Image 1 (cartoon, rainbow, N blue to C red):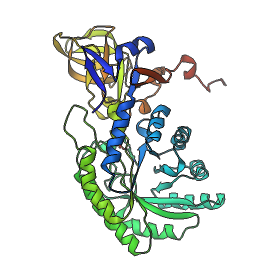
Image 2: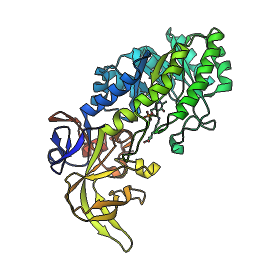
Image 3: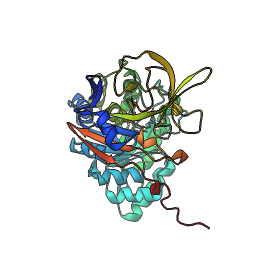
Length: 415
Ligand code: LLP
């Protein structure tokens, strides 16, 4: 469910024609729907209403302050993986007591920053990290609340680059070692055990891998509690998949029905680190056709957005639906939609059937709200795109398009 729909052949975001925004803001730009964000957040929140829970929106999916702000007002916390994401979350006004900090490579300054900010907890991923955290907390006279990230060794059946819960992954602590690590944590100064964490991967489109891993984790919680280690929070991670081409995927209530009994049985408060399901289909990337070009074997549509704007097709071979911003009944043709970047891997779609589009016309790359702008770069010294949010019949530029001066910021010195 989202609020990008055609009315009289024109694509709208809520009550604003996309074409109108493009005329004012220029292209390419990311476009987010305020109402879609809220709808998605509320659906997840209400699906889990029968158990105490906290949604910690996964900031890496889309870290724009406007997005964080909307979610904060809905009551969301934040799942962060860097000092930068902590900074953004605090700037957006997300209360520190709703912030959880994951990642295998937290640095000492990041630990200090998070401890001073008094965040809810660190999701610790190794014994060396745990030792350093204990040291830093003690030095600051603080207590670090922690969960250990346990690797449940389940196959989430997603793209290998975004599967994280298999035993060969670099993430988390093996379930066998977890008990030993919890015992070690219990005796470390400056450390307070409050929870357990798992995250098995992203864009998962089945409920079973979650069920399977949660069963393992729930058993572990029971065991730990028996040992006198109090686990108050059970963080099930993120990874709920979304439809990219209209396919049927589980909806929040499906996950909730399968998972709430397991969480409830542990007596824990559930934490959900959802990114993609909240923002993915709440955003699109709008681009303009620059040229058409045919070679002996292919037709290309050269557009003004590129892999530096949206890297998912190049990196994972991901499919993003592409729609003309103005519907037409021209004949369909098979084209590669490519950007101006000097790499053959720079494409947004391959062999895609689209109604013939001419230079100057606009297209929308759908489902681009998650891992779109946050993974964008300045490659080829391209300016990062503007970001715009529509709320009802108004649009707001929530991040200005970069300027040429931004490209050389901090490059004053020439030896
Ligand atoms: N929690 C942890 C510890 C994570 O590592 C992630 C995502 C999430 C939560 C949120 O997962 P989500 O609900 O958004 O699936 N760049 C890739 C996705 C990478 C996901 C990384 N971790 C993509 O574009 O598909």
